[in-house]
Amino acid sequence: MESDSPKPVLFHFADDGQIPNNRLPLLLYRAAFSERGTAGAAWLEQRFAANNWTNSWRNGIFSYLHYHSISHEVLGIYGGSATVQLGGSKGKAVSVQAGDVIIVPAGVGHQNLGSSGDFGVVGAYPNGRTFDVLRGQPGERPKADQTIAALSLPTADPLLGTSAGLVHIWK
Figure 1 (spheres, one colour):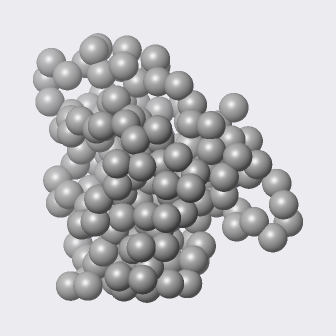
Figure 2: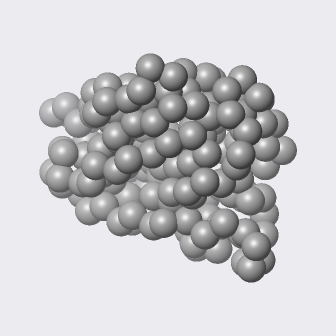
Figure 3: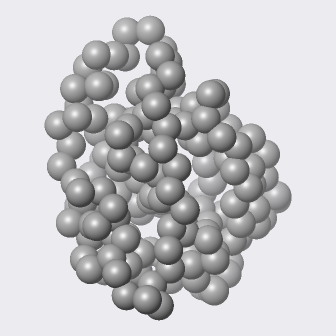
């Protein structure tokens, strides 16, 4: 990894019986970019797309606990701040703010516990994959577990590309 590349904070979450989580760590890049507002959203969309993370959207993070079984997800925060519960109810509440980028492996629970009025997020998926929204309900597993286990690893980090970040961490 290049010495000037941002270094992510890694979070490991075990299966808690409700949320499967993933053997892959969640990556949190702090203060990874400087653009804000609509310029920040456009910067994130372009950067993610350049690294083949597409099917992007602009919004926030759901206020209920959920995870995705058919795709990994990147969340780039271009405005405001929030407290996000990561890893399910037994995981960790983390404060995030504009400039942060979160890479969420499939199966890792996440939930917005509260945010500023100007909180804005760009989300995207490797290879433009679609996503599902699962909430840890009875009957979701073992199908969700099988789907998560079968997912291929992304060929690029949405922020850093093919030579740094998750391509080395998620081996």
